[in-house]
Length: 39
Image 1 (tube, helix red, strand yellow):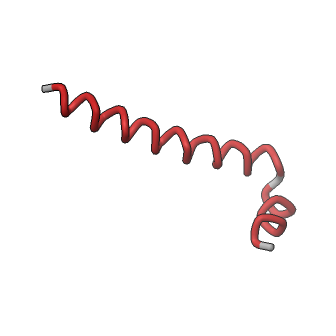
Image 2: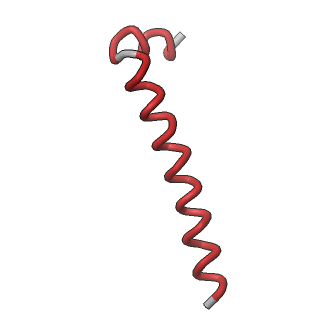
């Protein structure tokens, strides 16, 4: 229900953008951790 409200308030492209940025942030955190383990 909250997704429907968010999409109607902000717009579909904005919701997709925030979702992708959130996933990318998690991937970058994993990458940083992996790089630190190499040192």
